[in-house]
Length: 207
Image (cartoon, rainbow, N blue to C red; front, top):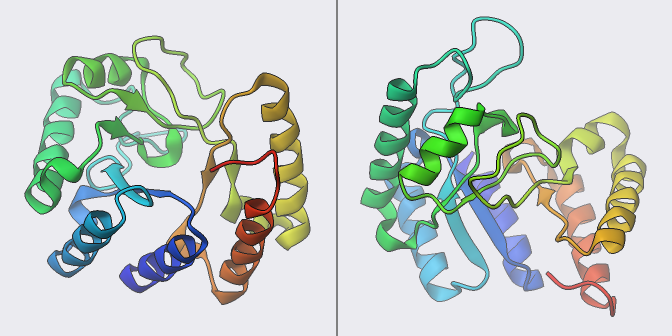
């Protein structure tokens, strides 16, 4: 949903809030790539981009969905990682950040070791995700906006955000907010715009 992606970027850029896009290599077309290159070059502090799997395809025969899970050999994972990196490099060159977000926010322990060996420098997945790994720094997700919105609308988002803010205020770690542009409608985007405006005036919050 390229239009939804650009609408979300319009919103965050107007608010002066940095957005890092987890780009699915197989899903990035030429037109979207041109637009994203222009935005990254114009405001590199507000728009970033990193790799999100290869095709967002499930390869687990049973259990929870995963593209880089235990059912796949390291050779197969390595091929997909490098293929995805090459696709993004062809579109974006050095603009691609050396961070990796696995589809469905989960991967095997071997995936993290493989990422580090291939030159990735950070992993982003859900906070507390298993298995635990120590080879890469993590930038974890605390709040999945769309999941809570679907469960209970703005009240559910507000409750989850409040809990996440209290937890991060206690440990001093950054709070990771995940947005699904294809799942968001105009009502959600307006609510997000209101949140960003309120956060911008708060003396203890910094993006």
